[in-house]
Image (tube, rainbow, N blue to C red; front, side):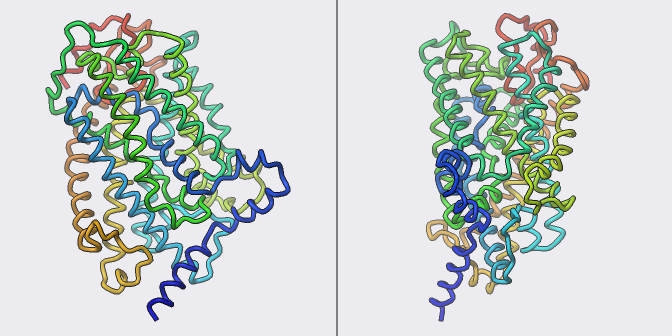
Length: 496
């Protein structure tokens, strides 16, 4: 009887392949193979590319800065630690998704024209209060995640072309990023995910090799960690780096067989660590404490065609990451106005446009990218992808019957259910105290300082004509001034 039940469950899950995608796959036989190659993705490899590409983007350039705040040893350990923590909570999200989808498909629910999202998983498993909490945190995180990408686009292009101020570049790139409304779902990011990962791979190894060839600067010092505010700000950036799994449910739903997702995020994290650890360590080794005043790793390396290529590639990747962060918001908006199941791509694209407007507006209000990045990491990422998934898993399977009938049993090497509950409790306590508590204190302190120093709606945040060469105590990718700028305001940051 038990075998029959298990077989039925697995049959249900496998039968739960995204029917709409399968239909599209069948129709693609009549189309060109080129369209299928670039546009229709739902394999395990597509999911891996999406996870790895989305996980490390502009933060790649800020990790050396975090190392200067944390010190080499703490920087390495925090990356490995938060990488494992992020992989675990991504696994929890995938297990809850499979549980929800299996239950719904037993009830003959049709997901043919419907993309399941995280807040719907929480609603189906735990009720409306959990749904509301998940919806609020997830949407706010993704909203500001999109804002961060838009500001980073403007900052990066200004870094190699200062003919226009950053606000004007924000207007331009806001219009460019609005074209993501035409991408139906995550399965259509196949070629972009692949290219995005190539771009970050090139940039990471450029930073590593260029730093080693450059060698250590004269009188280099590695004095970190020196101050608690800087230490926890650096730790928060790494927490943010490995908190990119807020779109896990949407990526799983884009798969032909979502039950195969389980280890994908862990494998993606391992690959990401091969990019982040060597690049951050090499740049910190070469420049040491100079990074405290240069939160953008590019700013300390000599301008060469190879460096300019890395800047341009990161600019393109930020456009792709904008789409990753904004697409779930498009889905939520479509569902709110009743357009989600509309089959007309143009109508859905037009309906999505209002989502871009507040992102555009917020990017103009808060142009100081670094402090927003840090604050989002401590106040939103901590709950969205660490605390809520861990608590949701504990509450969903709190009864013996629910654990016995669970579609996805915890791995044996983690100690099954007892081990899972111990790990979940640790995740909640650690992230609540260190990530949200200390990290929130450090990032909010710095955020307020930036507003006091530069004000809202600043036209060109930390641009060359200004004497405000104050680098933020967080993860600003492009806010750091070039080496030629005066640094006589740098000492202000030490007092916060």
